[in-house]
Length: 266
Image 1 (cartoon, rainbow, N blue to C red):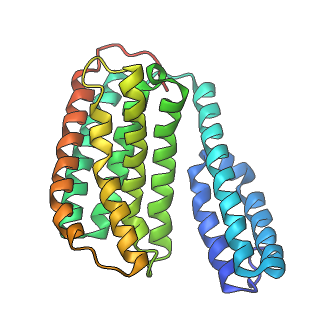
Image 2: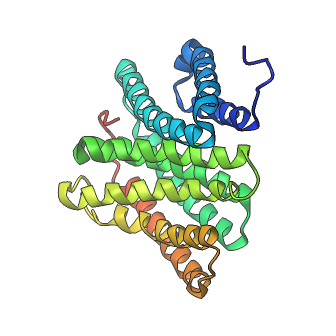
Image 3: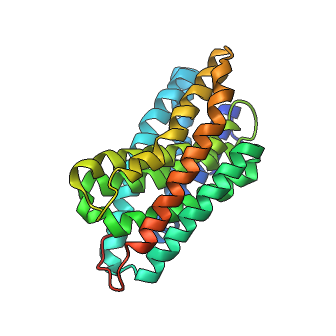
């Protein structure tokens, strides 16, 4: 069982991370299937490491993460169908305020480099994006609706992984979580340019999501290549400002564009 000593540190870390990732599933699913899934993953890790070493574990994780995202999205979709509940207008407006607060928290975290601030901003931004999905998801189509859910899931799991393994180079994943979420918002924005789900300013989601992913890709390149790019520091402040302003406007649009009665679009 899982209480036994794990034979290899890499397997131990993999199991620990996988256990944390299972929180992305709905609570009922976790309780019913979580322990079995964890046991199966542990057995796969032990067998894979014995047969393929570190490279084998890397390949296993690539397949596992792909399947995890697919199944998490599927389970949450089934949960939404079963619930058949409408998201109330006041809930969507609250999501708009969460988006505004998340934008401010993220900008301040980027300026002060406070890890806890990134975690708080991740929670607020995720809440805001779910409200955006509820308001405009159906009009944006399947890809547009699902990419926002994927962003919330992947962004949260990315930050959580960085929190669980707080050492180089994994610490950067805490700040990467919001960047992943915003990248998915930018993809939604591309869809919005064509499907026009919003009553106005359909280019806004793209503008509200693209800036920090651009900066983060540049930072990741610097961290893992070992090369210093002077322009990264010069880009950081204006991009954080643009990101904050665009998210603030998107939050206010979400609040003002929500009528008194909103049908279920989750």
